[in-house]
Length: 435
Image (cartoon, rainbow, N blue to C red):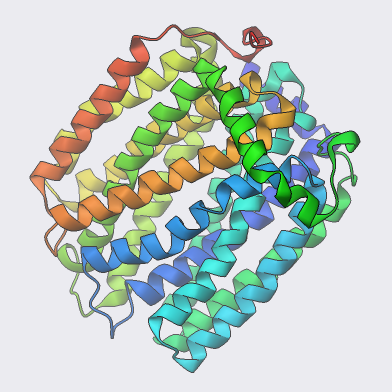
């Protein structure tokens, strides 16, 4: 198979393997940390989480550092990306240790959120840096396959990290000690990710040496101008802008369904007093979604070669619209778990195609800024969906109106993309964008 052949070729590239190793360790840590946060905020026995509480937690953790996102892009286009991966992972290790200490001290929620925010805010630099660096270690013809393998492998690593955190909670005594121990495990893995980045050359990941500005004040002073230039560049790349808009709509739907699933696991499918049962059901859903991500990584290169990137985004969004009502409207475990898998396939498939369009259409000098903006709209869409879900959902997570509305959004996304001409049927034909 062509995909397996390309995978073998990619894995023989030493710099790609090293960058992939940094991603795997980093996102493994993310999975551990995220489950620790979910356990503390939603599944703590002493907390009665509502949809509004879940939405508030997401807003506290996502919206503020979304505002940091544009700054990360400007800085990623001026700082050595290898150094960003090194220092950000080391910083996250230190900050995670502080968060674990606050959990043990039983501090007020606002202080805990502030500490957790400090960890997740740094994550913007890491994820945007990994995406911006990928074209520096892979040739253009295999960029779709690299986008299928690398982010999906990272997502699977995050799932493994989340599974590890679930195991810690199942075998440790309930309470703050288990949450703190899980966060400390994440800190150790962040440290390993930082050390792994040292295997990459200092200047390998870009930007080009003549664009590097080592002084923080110098880089920050040009932020506004740099952001404006990045937006203008994106405006001249309509294929990238359209793909980003479609992926944002799908991310919105995924965010609302995530809150729905959280509340179903917590209150509808298990005894609300049995937090381990609810957390276990959530773990199954996350695992099935990750399996869907893996399937998407296998089929997306084949699919985009035949229907193009925009065609594949259309297929993914249309399939989501058709599958969601029959699977989700029963609000029962079996169909909803299958929906978690199916939407994992379609969401990740669309994301792989979107990442490829942006990487192939956007110049390297602007790629960090564009990916950071991409990251910002991702988070804003997710938080906005959580806020709307908080208004629409009852405490047990069952809302027919919300499911129907999300299916309509998926359908509108498919129609919108279908009407646009696909400028690339496979990465090798994307070419250099018209200036």
